[in-house]
Length: 471
Image 1 (cartoon, rainbow, N blue to C red):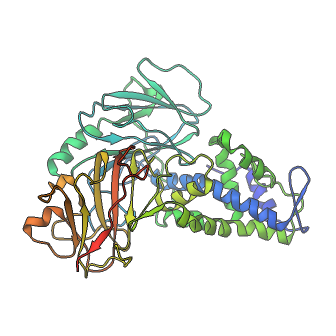
Image 2: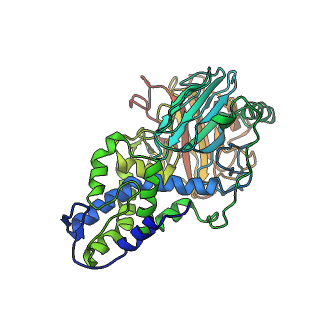
Image 3: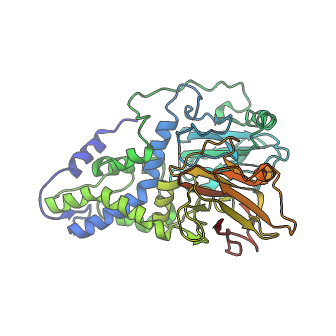
């Protein structure tokens, strides 16, 4: 997409210099301090939308589905779990295979057809442009029978074919971030692929007709090497706010955002309109220029309030749906874009043992679950091992997680011990072993479809046990 003269003019206006205060669209004057506060809040508010747009550009910059990229409106179907050599993204997943697609609903809806899943767990969370999960077809919510949906944009009105249920998206930008459970064995890969290959996505105009997705266009100007977060954080104020203003036209703010929209209007920022400055002096200009740095600092400073710390495990149950908690939404965008609703998954993460010391492969550890106190879930749970950089750890078993699918051995009293260490605890204990590197490492639980009543991590009646060093 190219910028219109209006947006380019806005860029020049934002960068201009004259007068000590900022003139709003109503002709009122705003001092530097207030201008910086409003601009910083606007930066935080828009961070998810701008990040989604940059992620979309990178992930769809392809002529055909290949690797982790596919053209707009087409699925990327991940065929296997990554190994220890994988470095594309941090904290990779070895429990579910991804099926992801980006949609532009501004021209017409898209139809998603899902087959009968049998007894295989899956979910198809759909994120709007602001990263809210607005719908989640899947085992938990809609069951495993065959189902067909039309994903429609905020302005679409029309009639759908029989048997097609409408899912109204709040924005024209939509990211489908589907996950399908797979044990990772050759036999289950084959069975899982057969199901995933039947996930069908097409424009409404092609529904019920033969359809071949068009080839995508590769834009050489898109940076495919620099991490998206780094690209977004590198944007200066004129580029950031101009892009945000343009994106808000196709991805309108929610009704609950009216106070924030009114606040941004104080500096002339609105959908399709960048700050309309009639008199901008050095002080106010500096306030605007400082907004990206101030906004980033505010987002990352939210770390301590973003979740809970229980027995050395940090996690949040405030993800996927954010309401007007813009700071939480921006923080989750920065550290975990694409997060599920807590009803679908919670991810406790631990970097230190029960004594508060960082994990090291020079030591041995045990995670002990009392009888009946393993993670309470209706789908599955696992613990994944990462090195200090949040990548898988090479080990003789090529084992990156420990979970019930490893045929865990319980103690005579019904309790469960998991062994976390660099060397094998012995053949008779390897089912319960999570191999660690020799250096520092990080542990992450994945609790899919956590129970919502006692015991539950969501209501706080279940807490992950502390990881105990073996003395």
